[in-house]
Image (cartoon, rainbow, N blue to C red):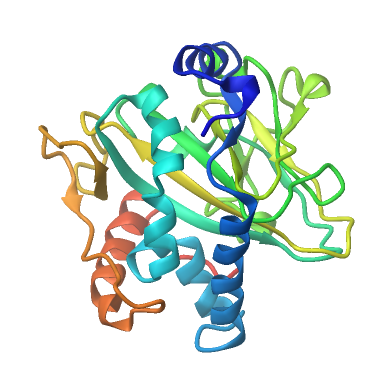
Length: 282
């Protein structure tokens, strides 16, 4: 179901095209979002934990190794909204679980998701940001700069001190329009959609509660990898182009270590294409 603000396909697409983002979108009931959160936290408390190796699983295509993530990237409420931007054929290019722990002051600097992605047509991709907890100004929610997607890609600088947050530490030092940035305040089960050229960032978490979101990059199958070799997974419709190495198989257990080899293969291909090195420790 889509919220009253974005109650039909026309209004959602119009808002997205005009602003470079659309929110709030009601992807699922709050209770369902809470159940996803509980499954993640059970894994954190048990076999996966919180360390750097666990973060590599959470941050890089978790839908290839965790059943909760495989279900979430295919959730009908999510895909129905994504289809209003991309059409009926949808692939997942990337996903990552982003958690801001209580009182974590770390800020995510201004950036454009598509700057280093190497996709042939960023306009045929969309980033979904799915809230598993509420996202507020106080707990460090994202802020979008309206209309920034119309300015093309802006030069980014790289900073090794924030490589744990962006693989190359890439960010925009002083983006135009930052003073008018809009906070993405969501309830659990809601999500935002944004263009890969939309400039955004987020402050630290000033609260005593976690902020937990899953970010998913969806693409239309006609989009090609600039590297010539990358992986993606079809989640709705048909791929009539064959530009992508198929990810898979989908996990059937909550933490499916039988998928570890396929997950490592996709990670190796992606990291070589994306920034030519091993993933830095979180």
